[in-house]
Length: 342
Image 1 (cartoon, rainbow, N blue to C red):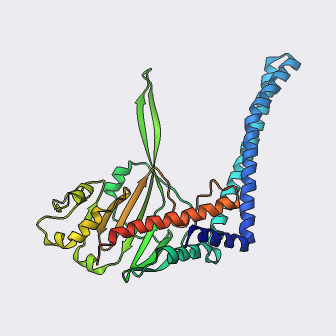
Image 2: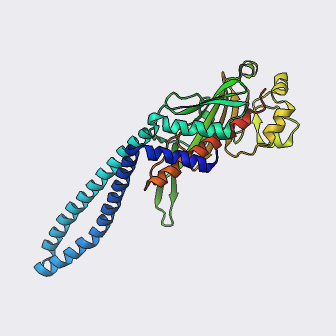
Image 3: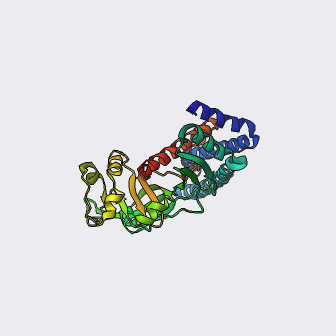
């Protein structure tokens, strides 16, 4: 399926769903009102200042002018801020309805499945399903350094609250899931030129995905094995490939014959030639899994759209198209790391 075909399929959904069009129209109108009242809030500063000057001229009394200025300022600004927040609350509610509406009649699920069958499916990679569980946008906040989080987190598990792909690869079932983004919060304290201590809040955006593959042969024979990038493991096993040894560390023992059976020359060559800066770990811990993560960007779970910049119907169609292509890009990049398994 070309991108043009995907665009056509997305357009057909909008043409057949009047309710969808009405929700988009509501959100766009609410955003216009937020913009209008934000402008009014900004202009009110100048208008109220002008009123203060007029009052001072009329009453020739700074106290009366100040009282009028203060009362009018407070009433005007509070009123405008309340109105803006009400509109923002309505936008959030309408956005949640829109995300849910997109999944009615399996519209989004079918777009993903059609794209997979046309672009991704092979004799080895087949029987794709989009498992829809949730359309809510959740960004978790943790007061911690992400390096510490990675070193201490448990092995990944498939969440039953987040959308995922189900598929068969070489006749064996697997799953792929994009986790909810995390904002890691930490505080940095510095001293300025005058000697004053300044504490600044820092946010690190963290997005990750995980692939699970139920290959019982490898799970049974190699449970506990790990190949990792970015954070060094303590295994002393080294391959004959300089490239592999530079890219990855393992927890494999050089005296364990299983190490060479797991990392065959074919596996070493294939893994050495994959270029993916987001790769984190390939491991086996009661299940075979691949983890990747990205710093500095919020990547939402599969099929979930960030509608912050939604201003018209065409923009939403572009968001859906880009999300589908992006999700499958993450998926196929993870599949590459299990392609040496037989």
